[in-house]
Amino acid sequence: MKTTLPWLLKREYWENRGGFFWAPAIGAGITLLLTVMGLITAEVFRSRFTGDIQIGIPLRRLTEKLSEEDLSTLGGVLDMALLSMSGLLQFILFFVVFFYLLGALYDDRRDRSVLFWKSLPLSDSSMVVSKVLAAAVVAPVLSTLIAMALQFALLILLSIYVLFHGINPLTVLWGPNSMVPQPKDAVDLYQHMKYFMGMGPRPKFDRYTYWEKFDYMAVFWGMFIIGGSGLLLWFFEELSGILPGWAFNVATLVHGHEALLAIGFIFTIHFFNGHLRAEKFPMDTVIFTGTMSEHEFKDERPLEYERMQQMGQLKSLEAQAPSAGKMMLAWVVGGTGLILGLLTIVLMIYSLLSH
Image (cartoon, rainbow, N blue to C red; front, side):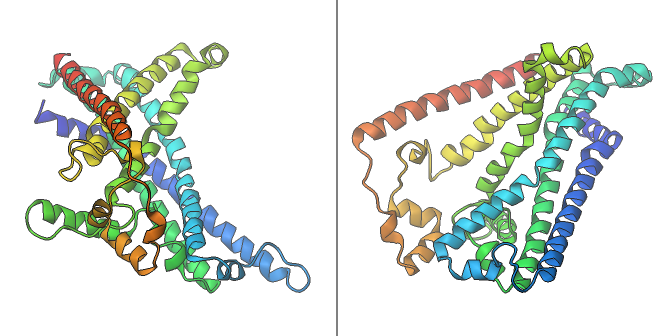
């Protein structure tokens, strides 16, 4: 299975690349095109209505009256707008995965290709695992990468647009408070890999690290998949008069595997980033206390610390240290969750290997 699984995954991709790659790519292209058309339409209307009629608030006049903190908030709002534009891609992903799993159940039997695959030295478990991984990992990862490329293209487009209006895009769109992946994240990832291998110093991080942005984006992987399939199962009585019975079987399969993937991601990647790193082991209690020491802040976010120190804003972040009782409660609740999470991972691996 170790040697055949990569080839089976490649087979799944090449046979379904129209849905896995081209469908979200075309969706991203349509989103980008509609955005360009919207910006052009806005400029045409603005140029026509000059004189006594004013449509909206001029961007330059708006930003001139905003403070540094207000500009940071405005950048966060634009971040959410950019992230929401990837919703179309996640909607497409739901239908791609839904019909892919439906085809995995019926197409191979209908066109008799299952007889060909049965003739090869492949186990049924390896074929099933390859299809589950293709639906739960390959398709969501490709969709997320295309969504990130779309957001980067939209960032460049909006940067040109605000620059046209006399606004510095570095302040509003490309600042350190942005949750949208930026070129610095790729540089930080490269430098971090070198640091792990002892080939360079640890990179200096700002307010958001590349892995935190990845964790944040990972929510969009299965949001539409698990939500859409959940709605089918929730309103099965109403929808049973419209959809065939096998649609609910597929929805059950999609819902269960996507939930399993989400739990697996939380208790492996997210737990490692949040709790099992050397500087956080065995647990990061900031989620329960809402505070961290100045030493931790300076060590983890040196660029943000230096910037706030230069701006004289460190004093505004000072807070009372958590009490001993609050820390004890944080350790009890967090430790219980950590133990249950690790136990869940062990049971998932055992279930996978024993079936």
